[in-house]
Image (tube, rainbow, N blue to C red; front, top):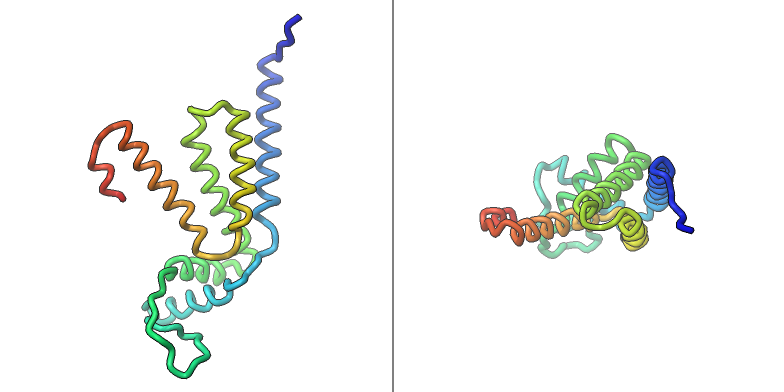
Length: 169
């Protein structure tokens, strides 16, 4: 005797799995902010917005004469400050949730045609668990997008052999 599932039940199960996965993502990424050096990034973003420049030394250094320094995370600090200015701590939590959700959706969008649904959901689960350890309010989070776009461009080049696509890298 072969057990079969109707199409309506399959669709209902898929919707239920998607909703549970969405709830899991929400719980993981909408938790309280763990700042570590988040206040420093917000203060640096404020300094950049107020001075319309990127500092060449740490403006918050406690030493008498700070050493010259290159701020490599200026864009992330500025974005976080602007989000904080608009929405305070709650705005930062929502922004973090949306950032991680967008990174996951990019993965799902490009993998959905190649990976069966339930395998894809399993991969999303592992992706969320892996990203949860990097869920700090740091500009490092934006690297997830750069890595994905880099891989998308390389995979597109592999398919099309059009070297003009590589100019984005």
